[in-house]
Image 1 (cartoon, rainbow, N blue to C red):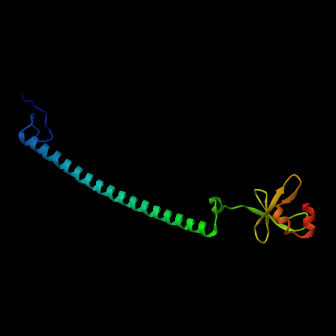
Image 2 (cartoon, rainbow, N blue to C red):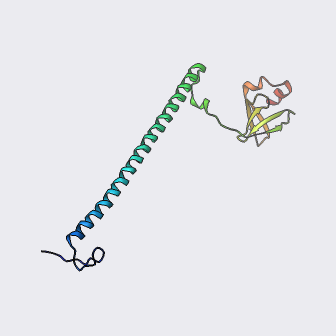
Length: 150
């Protein structure tokens, strides 16, 4: 059984010749070869990206492991038990003069800090507008301040 195709592209004839089919096959093969080359290029690029990503992951793991080793060394050296002691955080503080006439730093979390050492020395009570000093810190205060603590 034979089919006759309209073929104005190749020869302008009312049927497809063997030369027309060969020309179409050649053209399709060229398209296929170009697509194959493009695929090979894309595969090569993808492999390079995968290699680069693996290198980056390896470097990140190495850095993480080095930091973990440093942390463990410092933990042993200084005897810290909890990781929270290493956490860095910022507290916004404002300088203010208390009723005792001394300057302090008060954090947004109402923690009172020594103005010189920046150590936590007590808690601000907003209702009474007074400082509740830590017991350890109360011993270090001036006598006139100490009487206010009691």
